[in-house]
Length: 164
Image (cartoon, rainbow, N blue to C red; front, side, top):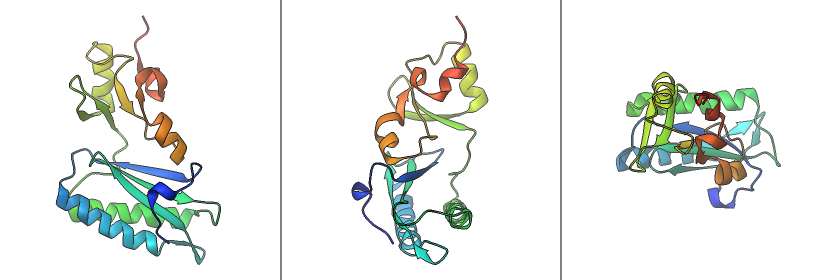
């Protein structure tokens, strides 16, 4: 059952699907309509799931689930991923490529780079510990609000910083 994202509890589980490109208005509208319909009927073992989503910066789709009423199962998560895959095909976009790292460039614009190119940029000094990255490994709404958009030095990406 679909609800408002703002009303989801801080401990609500989240999944982040990152587009490698800016999503134009028409694509955001189509994604929103499809996700609203999907989440309104999303179930686990016949139980309705209390879920929501938001699209941030016209690039990140964040699906949230209040597991206090009923938890997602492997099958229900698979259905969510299959729905995202269908959106990728329908809109000719990439949402599941985990090799792409999103960060803010020197002009504070959001950019993405393949993880190998991202690491190379760290090694050659184009990016540093203060570069803002998007930590898509956060798992709750509270973490989304406090730890998602952060500096490399405060993220798992810090493991790629060159040793001085």
